Structures are given as structure tokens and as C-alpha cells.
Length: 394
Picture 1 (cartoon, rainbow, N blue to C red):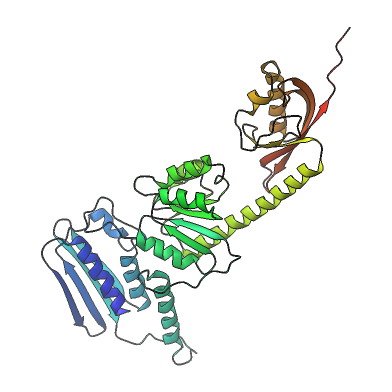
Picture 2 (cartoon, rainbow, N blue to C red):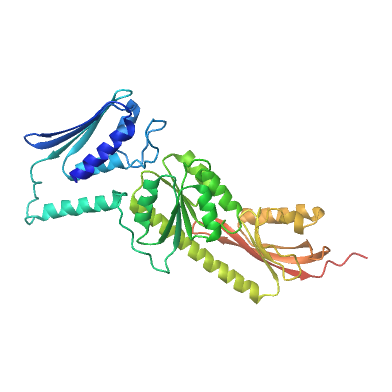
């Protein structure tokens, strides 16, 4: 563990030191062993000092030899020092350098009353092994291949350490393919659509928000669940990510178990949705009526099988009203839709519709709202039956 602590401190010092020296000092104290790594690097701004041991935190606009860092090295130092019943502190001046000092107790950790000999040592060793397994992203070990029936995840992050970390974290449960930028994500997803995408928000050239927009604009990929990872916290950042098209938004630093749980939840939602889609297609095959699906406010027609009566819509359409409803009939139809949406009740009306051959015909249209556990409408499913038009007054 000392090797990992010193290696990460040295790696950090080398990254931010361009001239001068890096000094490592080891001292035996009466109760502790102390190691100090002192450099003459760029230093750390005072307001960043409280954050340096936070997982995934990277100081903005700091000059370094490479930008390929995930912000986990110093967090690992902190966690390992705590597991060894020690502590770590930092002193730094911008333009002069930094000094990191780690103390680890020399005494055997005191066992609790009734503990068996060696139990505390074994518990500490197990904790250290778990920490090393979760954090060490530079190992050459290759994750065991996932089973063929496991879901396929596409992970995108421009940072190599983070890609390795996420791959090691997720591979025990799913097939994982990791890429380095958003463009590679689009190309890979179009070749072989994944079951879910995990994407970092802050990436060069095309960021995660733009990636989300492009995924949702692609008919073949718009239904793929997308989880965004970002160091930007707060409601505004979360809303921005969800508005762009993300299904979930997770702020760094995150607990590994939380990411795994959120991925599992999104995959289960997709499975349920696909089951519903199969049932919908079975309904379409069993009826002679036109069958359609609408989003909660009817601004988007998600699909329409017109049965030769109305032209099919295979891709979601925001222009369905002008495509199928004559302008004079639109106000009355919209009023009926607004009333059904407002009351969350069945939409049921007779109106004119443009047939597949371009002529106008009458239809009896009926749609029911599908609601979630909170009573909010998630979709409308309806049928349209061709009927004789009203008999004109003599």
C-alpha cells in the first residue's frame, strides 16, 4: 500500500513540475511513519486545496504535462492512508510548489473487545484489497469476458484512466466497449447499437450534451438509454443534461454501486418498454383499424399503422397534424385533444382525416392514456376506424 501511496504522490508531482526538484523524505517517528513529497511545481490555488482529495476532481485551467488524468490518484492516497489508520495533508503556494505529507501509525490497530486475534488485520487487508481493486486503473489485468446474453454498454470518456476504471467496474455485469470521444460513439453505435450508453459531459470537440442531441435525432438510436457523468453539480447542470436527452445524470464523485444500480434500472426500463412495444405490434397485427401512438401532449406522433386507410408513419413525426388533418378541422380536433390531456381521460371523437390517396374521409378516433405510477401520462395509444360521414341536411 505504501508503494501505491508514494507512486501516486510522485505521479502527481511529476505531472505539475516543469523545473526544479521533487524531493521524497521518509521519517520514523515515535508513533508514526511519515513520508513527504515536495515539489517546485505550479502549485495549487488556495480555493482548490479542500478539493484535491475528492474523487474525480480536476482543478480547472491548471498547467500540467498532460491532461490525461481522472482525478483519482490523490483520492486513492487519501483513502489508503485512512485505511492504514493514518492521514494526509497538503500545503501549496501557486507558482512555488506543493508539499504532501502522509502519516501512518506504526502500532497494530487495537482490536475491539471480544475480537479474535488477527480479525482486525484481516478486515483491514480485505478493505485495502477492495480499494486497490476498485481504484487501480493502471493494471494490465483483462476483465473476464461477459456472458453472451448480457447487455452491451458503450462507454465514452476522453480520459483513458476513467475509461479503464469504468470498464473494470462494469465488465463483471455487462459487455463493455469503451471509446475516447463522442464521434467514435456515434460511429460505433450506428454500426452496432448498444443497449445503453454511459457518456462523460466534458469532452473536447463534441461534448456529451451535443452527443445527446445527435443520439435523439437519430431514429435508430433515439431509444437507447443514455446516462451522463459530470463533475458539474447542481440542479441547473442536471436539468441541462436531462433536457438534452439524457435518461439519467450522475455527478462525480459517485459511488460505484450507485452507477451500477442506475444502469441496471435503465436497462430494466428498456426491457419493459420493449415488451410493451411487442404487445403494441401484436395489437396492430390483430386489428383492421389504424393504430397510433402519441407522446403525452400529442405534439409528437410516435408511430402509425394506417392499414391502407391512412398513410403510415414509421418515424416519430411532429408535423402529423398538418399531414393528416385539413386546416379547417384542426381547431376542433385540438380542442378535443386539450380536454383529454387536461382531464387525463379517454380521447373519443369523430373527425375528418386525410386518406392515403389524399382525399378526406371520416374516422372515429379513440385513444387511452397510459400513466406511470404517479399518475402522469407517458403515452397515448389509439385506434382510428373509417366511418361514413355525417348526412348533409336537405
